[in-house]
Length: 151
Image 1 (cartoon, rainbow, N blue to C red):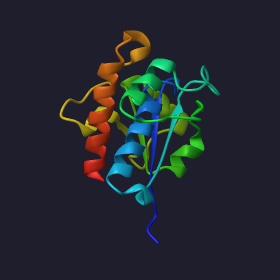
Image 2 (cartoon, rainbow, N blue to C red; image 1 turned 180 degrees about the horizontal axis):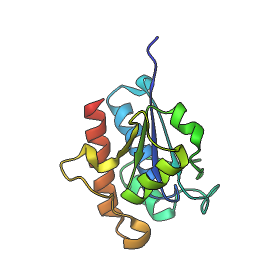
Image 3 (cartoon, helix red, strand yellow; image 1 turned 180 degrees about the vertical axis):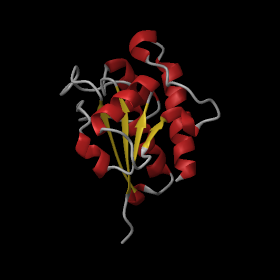
């Protein structure tokens, strides 16, 4: 039996960008008929939103594309996640720094930026500040498509 590839998407609060990435990626692997190959989750670097559901505008943006995030609750990333997951994908440079702090480094090279899997490296737009969920959707979709291509 093949070991599933496990991916953890991470942002600051786990209510906008990382859950969008989690559910977009789940949707892409389902449509590709590759669900059995992957285990996908998302988490926060902060404690601010723990237990909260996906932010309504993010949930609405996913719903526009026929993607449900029903039942998702924000959780904080832990040091154990570094052992549990093959890839830990951060949404921006600040997330990456916080992820490395939580994991006490990145000895195995598992931590990556979401947009490193696109032709436009950089930060995923944070809709919490911009209010532009369309730009975030594009960044996340492109990142997930690129990531799936590399896997």
